[in-house]
Amino acid sequence: MKVVIDATPFDPWKVLDEYQKSMPKLDGQYGATAVFVGTMRDFNDGDDVSEMFLEHYPGMTERHLENICRQATGEYQLLESLVVHRVGAIKPNDPIVLVAVWSAHRKQAFEACREIMEDVKSKAPFWKKEQLNDGQDRWVEKNTKGY
Image (cartoon, rainbow, N blue to C red; front, side, top):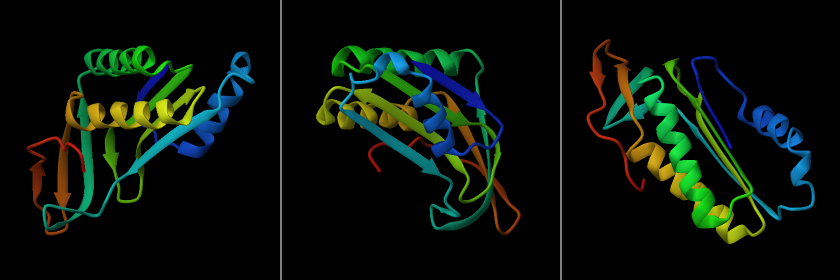
């Protein structure tokens, strides 16, 4: 299990490739890898958005994400999991989050990946401040669930 929170832009496919290559102990054990990549949209709540600033509570946020992964590992018999999340200034089309899980079977991989991502979006301690195209700033008031 690995959790990374960083302000540095990342290429999710490169990160995924490098991480998977670092797991030779799993060669032949997994039959499924489920991946979700979330990117920033240029709109929200009917307004055009030019940038977003994502904040987190260092230490607390990492522990929360690690707990999500541990819980999913037990529930879905995951062999490995990876969560990478951006913080700081983010522009439209920038990757924000990568969730990847490895399992012996596809059903467990799909369900675990979705459950981890839903928890990240609805419960993890991140705060979003959007900059609208008209120059106004606003905090995103609610986390999203099930969208």
